[in-house]
Image 1 (spheres, rainbow, N blue to C red):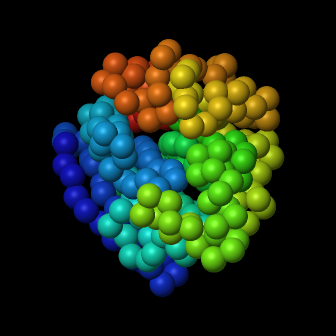
Image 2 (cartoon, rainbow, N blue to C red):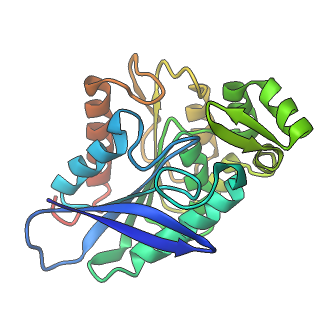
Image 3 (cartoon, rainbow, N blue to C red):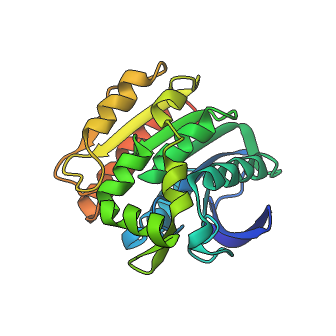
Length: 261
């Protein structure tokens, strides 16, 4: 397996990314997975979730991409300028960038979104062509779910001062207002490709009921939502991580997107 760093210019920002490729030499083009982080996240992920996921799936034959939205991780920009609308635009640019890479099979692309990244992925998937969408403990009601995490005091402070300092991340009034205009449940109803929904059974940040809500709005669901027993929102144990990866890979293999089953 090989690992390299990349950067991509989107609007006036430089997004930092990483690519993990299978170690073996292959003549065929590779199926791709792009991992999408969530609220105050990064391409590394809590307890290195996206690093470990990328290594796992690269060993299974996928080209794996992970990246930082602007204002996050090692990308340029400030978090105070972040909005979900901007993140959707950036993800669409990332998807197109990956499709244009010569070693990638543009007809075999999977988007895996975690938490708010799940909502971002569902909306982006409704606006462009992807083959599979995987939601890991995905936000379904962006404004309500994020305010549940930050507290209503953060919204009031941002409205009053323009910004609120949330654990070192400046959340703007515009950020909160922008969340209100997005409906990933409506968006996923227009996604024509296959969808997998996985949720942490003991999710403390995003209601487990959202898995059922996504399922109810999805027209291409192959299997019912999968619940990782006892797991926390970020699947913070090796047991939960391994089950998350294995369940996702099993589903991907069933849909025959993998180049080397």
